[in-house]
Image (cartoon, rainbow, N blue to C red; front, side, top):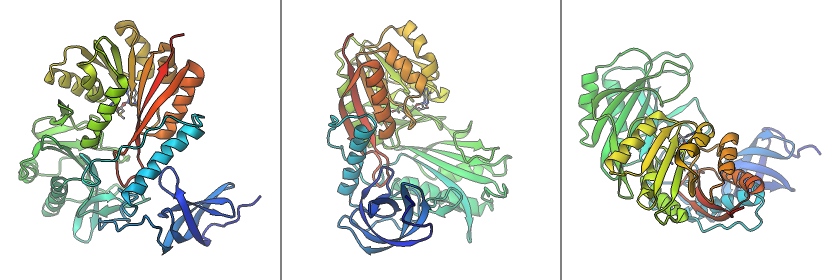
Length: 456
Ligand SMILES: C[S@@+](CC[C@H](N)C(=O)[O-])C[C@H]1O[C@@H](n2cnc3c(N)ncnc32)[C@H](O)[C@@H]1O
């Protein structure tokens, strides 16, 4: 049967719910249309942007009648800015949608008709919660400026005056760097022509320590006065660490080697009583307040009694493992980023943790070796990136067969498919899944899950 809509067609639609990822779901005689910027209960005029056999995509061009959960977005850059998707959806409705996405994933992809799902934990702060921001330079009438990508555009940057997801200090540092770039008559890099110089600005903050790290990313060559940049940034007493990276390639990346221009090479953050060193490229959960909650949930799920061998896989700078070490016999962490492992080892020393060890490696490649060295684990904590456990990592984890696996996930769809494989192929049961909202106004949802495996 041909799709009942055509590209560029204008439709009037009523949105029923939010699909995973944040588009509204509307139905036209049963045919599903995903509506960008459509919120539950809205009647919208929408233009069809893509048609497929089973569904179409559209963008809302006008809200004809607002749904009951629409609220005024506080940010002046919303909805043009791609940083937030749901500032105009009441927070309770955001939570309900996220909870439902986790439930749907576990039902559809893990095949669990009644998943053991707890109510979602709301974020402690709905705004100002991010401890890391990555801005792009662009050019406007006033010269070089800094901002975030426009919604749906990787090639357009929107100047930002105030971002509601970062702190006042974070906003002030970004705006001061914009002024500096103008005063120094430096040109923003142009992604199309590859002309220009300034590419990105990364600002990281230890939200519980008040320390900030700034990383400037430029095209090749030293075309700025270091001393002046240092002078400008140290106007902020919070700035403790200033780095510079050169991006010689076309890709818009910031995880590059850095040159320390001034100050300490790392800043510190404090989470759950642990002092943590954070370098420019090391992974740290971007919501400090909620990371504390998430790690506390992971610790509860691990249910350590003091005698356990714990693996902390995808350990980043060691946060989860170190927060469990006091209740375990030994903790063994694996992480692919050498910079993060270096931080994990420093963090272990900083917190005088004597029973943990951290290694650099790809989990799938080195897990068998870790088992030879550390012995069988009683508890394995995994906290993989969005792609979930890659094939080999999952097989190795299944073969090890620890009785208790705590799975911290930032993507409910890969969590659900990994849960399915761990149960079908390795005898695990999902016994607890706890969604946590770390990122209000965005479609991201975190989940801490517990899988148990009975002794064979
Ligand atoms: C979601 S983060 C979790 C970090 C840490 N558990 C935390 O809460 O801060 C995922 C981490 O996995 C690391 N990683 C990605 N792929 C990996 C792999 N194949 N093997 C080991 N670590 C990997 C990333 O560098 C990142 O630090």
